[in-house]
Image (cartoon, rainbow, N blue to C red):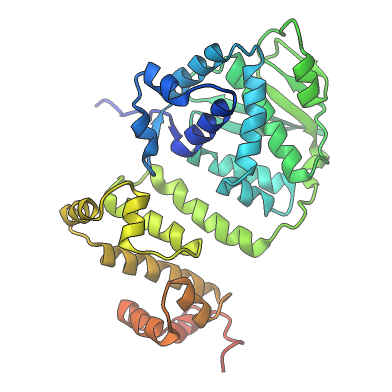
Length: 348
């Protein structure tokens, strides 16, 4: 029996960040994607991934067209800025108590961006080493390798507010004639022709506290990111796509509706309804299921009032939520909280 092997992929979130960065450098992303045999319309889909080999080809094409001898270094800088500007995984890191915890979360959830390379943290005496393992069949050439090192450096400086100093940067490839940009970006000793690319810093830096970290916000963000992590194991049905999008919209406080969901999936309402019907599902069934799941999570934790949960889920009155929850579970919200041993101090 031939065992099916996993082919590494890259999320459209990372592709869009890449597109934004190279477009700012004057490169035509649509033209580059077309040149490697990928239709630009693919990148308009809200929930998809591309193969690691296609992303590698896209990267090499952009590097060649840029004419920048330090393309990887500069792209890594830009990716760190773009990543810090809004990706949910960065907000998870920013709300961890320490740099060490933030690194653990980043490494754990990194595959939601890409599973073409897995970051690794290794402790050696008084020093910590950040490197990565490339997926089988993929090679990390100079520009992608330097981009990873540059991006990691930028992320670490963001979350520590520039309180972390790099002790040494190691590169697998030979050094270029001009290392001025390497010196500017890393501000650390450079070692070329090493066994692998690595950032080295003092282990004590892992204990640096992250300013304004919020444990409750971290809990909510990690619950959301954990659901994203399971996408690779799930069959990618339209019912799942709708459920995931509904969950994201509700937790962001957005008003949900079938027109907004259809727009988010780049479909017409009729097409969405037809696709759900083929899976023996409907929009309303999925909305009720997602609302039920979120309600159960919040009620079990006992960190929000029933009224707050009702409004989060889009109910205009708590009584309407109470009736809906009783219909879904057979229990009232208060009864469910008692069953789960939630904190009831705020209720008489």
